[in-house]
Image (cartoon, rainbow, N blue to C red; front, side, top):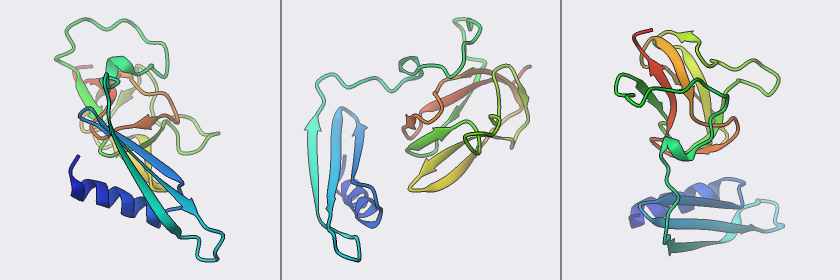
Length: 160
């Protein structure tokens, strides 16, 4: 991780109300924590950054995630499937609110531009849209779980 990226993360933590943020990338892990003071402005007096190498980093491939719903076995050849990836680090939500129906379900036919989920980043809800039409073959992330930039969220069969 480069210094510019880490400084940007520190600034995000300082400007938010979160107490800590941990990011893993390329076998390195950075944790940024802040201690909020009891002052009226609520800003941090100090932010600490800890960077440690990860001996055996956890894989961030779809195989390491738990599917949100049981699904049919997928053929070994998934080259014809289109991946919908997370454009940012954040929290994955399948529905617009806890009591609402999910945007999409397993085996549902979707259209290009259709909202398939939300990724919350820094208290902003970002709607993620499908880049193609097809059928949802696999949902690779559990609701309310953290996602990384570029992590595959859904597999879509565009020929269905």
